[in-house]
Amino acid sequence: MSSAEPRAGRARRRLTATEVDLEVVRQRALLVGTTIGTRYIEEAEASLAELALLTDTAGAEVVHAEMQRRDTPDPATYVGSGKADELSELAEALDVDLVIFDDELTPAQQRNLEKKFERDVVDRVALILDIFAQHATSQEGMIQVELAQLRYLKPRLRGRGKELSQQAGGIGTRRGPGETKLEIDRRRIDSRITKLERELKQVGQSRETQRKSRRRGARTSVALVGYTNAGKSTLLNRLSHSDLLVEDRLFSTLDPTVRQVQLPGGETVLASDTVGFVRRLPHQLVEAFRSTLDEVVDAALLLHVVDATDFDEAERQIAAVQTVLAEIGADQVPELLVLNKADRADPETIRQLLAAHYGSRAVSAATGAGVGELLEGLGLRLRQLARVVELAVPYDRGDVLAALHREGEVLVEVHGESGTRIRARLPEASVTRFREFAVTP
Ligand SMILES: Nc1nc2c(ncn2[C@@H]2O[C@H](COP(=O)(O)OP(=O)(O)OP(=O)(O)O)[C@@H](O)[C@H]2O)c(=O)[nH]1
Ligand SMILES: [Mg+2]
Image (cartoon, rainbow, N blue to C red; front, side, top):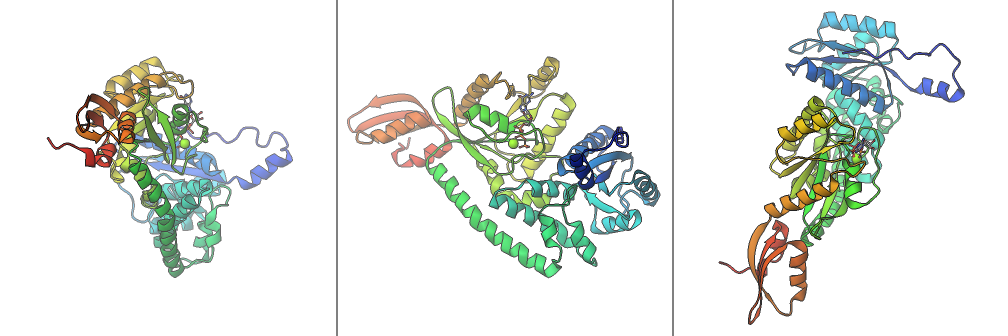
């Protein structure tokens, strides 16, 4: 792992007032990655590089990244006491404010390391939680994130005094909801968790109502899933001609947004944009975001968007996303893999990824290349997933007939004595909705 260069020019010229302000707030971080839990150094290095991105997103500055080869964690210090001493000296020499570990530390490990380093010690989980806290804007998002933070914090409260609560504050800028929890003790954490769970349920109910009414509307829904920054929001904008927030940073989307997408056949589907995934997404977050992630579990099809600019990294991200999908119980939902950013990728990389993933499609959400074909492919997959049913619709139910044409594919239409006999390929939701007209074979 290459270490981050100390910033050039730091002492060379005088800083402007704004720069001085930034200097003051940006904390300096030393990153530590290990090969614990993975057999491959490449995997550990990719994860550490990602930790650097996460650190930057959280608002702190990466001063140096250190990689240690090790198979099992040391119960007291995670990296072993020799390495911990070495890191302590490094932290001192580099004058960092905090040390960030690329793994989840036990409360005891974190405590011991903090004592040794005389600095804040943060793990990957806390870092990700902090980013989410900074990005949450909706009521539901803020409740979910605070819930996740409290669940993370609770086991870490044992035997700690004031300094822990301070530590719960934001990384980087030291802002974020954590700071308001300065004086919270364990009992209050419990009652706060209960209160938030109740609130989340209430907020979740209106989401559930919306979802039910969508289901009644028998619209097929697809969900865009994928690694953070893969281009999900950009693709949904392209597919639905809308204007969702797109940013070159991690976790810009926290709340699911639903948009209508018109398929080439004329039918429309509902597509939802969701929170991006990342390697080892904290389980506290997955737990807290369960209600929003239900959009994914309920979808008829997942559009799995992957940044296809690098073959190995794309493969790693695909695997990480599949792990999270399994965690939320969505691994059985059919998936269409979308290789995005084809405009920036080497054609050979795209060719290899297409060959490695049967049925995948290459697009550029940015330029629109391949998006028409993707929509064709989406329509095709949804039709394949649909069921063929026989229906008898009375003549006074022109509304049903129209709906059948809109929602599915009418294969045969015969006008009989009492009404219209229809054989149609329908999405599951429509089959349920028009059950009363079904002709039992
Ligand atoms: N070159 C290129 N850049 C793209 C493409 N699609 C998205 N991007 C860029 O990738 C970055 C991330 O795009 P988003 O659409 O915000 O990604 P996302 O998956 O929604 O990310 P999160 O919501 O943060 O998880 C932005 O800078 C986009 O402009 C593409 O097809 N080509
Ligand atoms: Mg997004």
